[in-house]
Amino acid sequence: MALALQIATFVIIVIIGFLSFKYFPIVINTRNITLTAMLVVLSLALQFFSLMIPLFGFPSFRVGFSQLPLMIVGVLLGPSWAFVAGIIQDILGLILIPTGFPFFGFMLNKVLIAMIPAVVFLTVKKMDHKKMHYLVLSLLSLFLIGSLLYVFTNDQLIVENNIIEITTTIKWSVSIVIVVLISSLMVFVKLAQDAQRLNKVPVAFWTLSVLLVEVIVTLVLTPTWLYAMYEIPVMLSFLVRVVKSAVMVPLMMFVGYGLLNIIVKNRAFASFLQK
Image 1 (cartoon, one colour):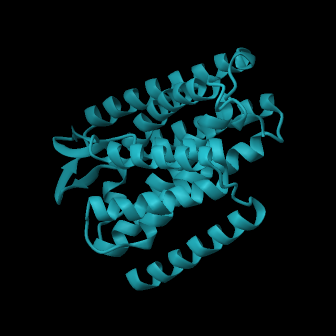
Image 2 (tube, helix red, strand yellow; image 1 turned 90 degrees about the horizontal axis):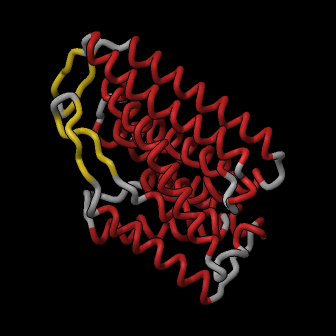
């Protein structure tokens, strides 16, 4: 299975690269090269500063922002540079932080982390911002409901080969945290709609990008690759990922949105979001 996934993901990466360069020709200049290099280096540096937080009594919850610089590359420079940044970051990451034999699935993760915001932004530019806000609020509501349903329909999970019984108290505690975080983000998105003209970065775009990255990469692809490589059960450790995503979506939204607005207010980068 691992070999088949290696081949499949490699083919997918090649196809994504071909389509990116075909429909979004890469613009090579000093500014784009410098910005991409800086953000890739920042992404690599942030990998060393991720924190493992104890969850359910074990260090199972990693908080880090290494994906944020890659997402910003996608926003500012488009799909082609996003593809390049994802590939380079993964290769350099394997050199600097060896984690075993290379797996193309994780390279695909890095590519998608950078490219999803690029593709979403190109789509958002063609959509009515008001409708986009309603779409994002609806997706956040579905994410909230789905997370709560999953929490209350599971009675155990595995963390570092330890089976943990999920009590009613744990379920309610986790649910309250998820509701508070996602509800706060929904309120922010709704309020930001009225003040959108004050910011150059569409808040709905960034929120949708963060949500899609978390769902596609963290909740779907990463558990698939881990199962293929190490036969780690997907569903029994899925609750940890749900909690992590519920925390990281608001964090990535607020931190990334603030950074993007700071960047595009700089005259050197102001033209990026007006292409």
